[in-house]
Length: 198
Image (cartoon, rainbow, N blue to C red; front, side):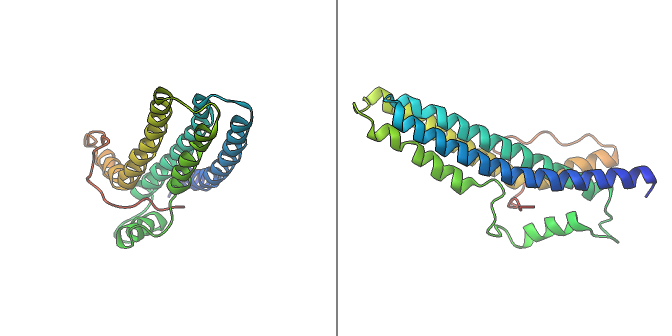
């Protein structure tokens, strides 16, 4: 590798490390802030619709975690295509992708989906215990917004599961000078590789 490539490689590996660490801290800080806001909402606000404020914080936290994860995976595929030799020097990125293919699931969820879904359910509790009881319209609005939030996490987790294969295909096309494949939509099922945590 040239000195420029070595410097680029080091910067990319640093980016992966820093964003992976940031993802965990963002999730932790987001859950702490959400729980404090939820408790404040339950204690001081009597409108069930107020539960949408902590819900918004929860989804914002998830979207930041998702963006950090997506960036890390994309940088990893770039390294895999432009810095590793699949035939002679199968480095970390090749091995990480192969690990995900051979052992799907792995018990680690890099997007923290289960805690986020649990928090969405818990976020409904203040609406259920406020006085006066919420009316049907309030329940429809509050329930629908919570369902949309849960659906957002489901869609993002499915996209993350397919991202490695899609990004690998696109970077290989770029390296070959071909037109990259079209962007994957929400229903893209070309890959079944579960996202692996870094």
